[in-house]
Length: 225
Length: 361
Image (cartoon, rainbow over all chains, first blue to last red; front, side):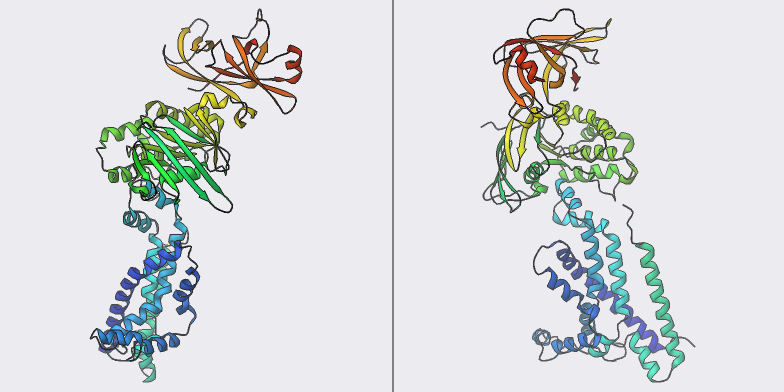
């Protein structure tokens, strides 16, 4: 016994999805975290709350609204149709977009905390040493906030692997397209294939444990300096 | 106006703090921005560095406009060096890479010889391979100063570089700063609230209070102005600048020439004709109407009273000039009783007996 072909397909899809989502989140989550960490705008609270919403909302609620927004009559759906892309629900890309929303706080918050902890001073120092804004970001912020970025990447990845409710709402259950590991486990259980379910579920437990272990090893709360 | 000067005009209005300055500072030498905390001296320095920005600002450094109504040169494009109050080394880089960080970006004809000069000046050659957390507070600050110098800046800004250090560390760094003072060709703005540091390091002083400039001028002149807080401090003192005239090795003494007279101090490790700066505390100067006879006091100088001012505790602060000119001011603090008994008044010739001379460099 072991993983069936369908299981392996689900694992591959899950890893592909989580990697891509993590990459996208680092790219768009970093500017958001940067802004949240440094702004004095009165919108800070509202934007921060919107980013954090997936922490408290049931995944089915997020999935429901995303489904409507990406549907044929929703704003996102209209936009994707006008680009000739069709509509996103029940496609791999629909899942990507939904996962980006769903995992956003797990990426934004560690980066935001790290940047806030850094404070203004290292950036001012770099400016007096002739470093321009991008230079300051890559040579001072990234290395000094690296534990924050690593936590963000790991949490974003792990959280995307672990999602279930949003996937069901947006992606459905299409083998090789949207059937990720968590859905595959659900299918096994529905079909009373407990042995198969054990393999996948046990793997998820080990995977999650290893992720958290890595996280606590690289980022033991206290930075050395 | 001369090309080698710094013109700074800034106005800023916060509910709890306002700043309004219009200064012309010398284009070389050390200028101290002196005042209590909250007087706006650090804010002024940050405005000059471009770390803070006000709409109403004008800044011209040695002929180049860094800020006016239209332009605002961002900090990283200003040819300056900045030393922050606390150690500000990048913790992820060792001392050498910290030095190189700015040098690489300044990109000018900064030769390794010039880096070597900064390293030697601050005595950090043996520290270069260490990480900041392996350095003491004083060592970190020396690396930070060298890092600013290695940029080959046209203006060096220092924000209380000693304030975060204990007395011992301060004593460790001060000699290096004094060497800087002698070696640097560029203007230095030095923020401080310590009269001692100012007396030792500065040529010019800008006295600030509540965001305004109270007075500015040569350090010797400002220290002896009776209307300013400097002279009313317990440590009130006059700064005398002179040159080494001769050494008396038998008695381990050095004779100094100051405008209007001579001073004898304990043997200095200086060469003849070297410039020296000494500080004479007002409390160490007593006055006599007639030339005292035999006395153990080495320095008894003819002087003339310029100004008298009563201060607290029934004491009187007296400003004198040594000799007949008005070049070298001296301060004396005596009791009101003595003033009355001797009948001291402005213009009167007296003899100033100096009990102690503190050497600055």
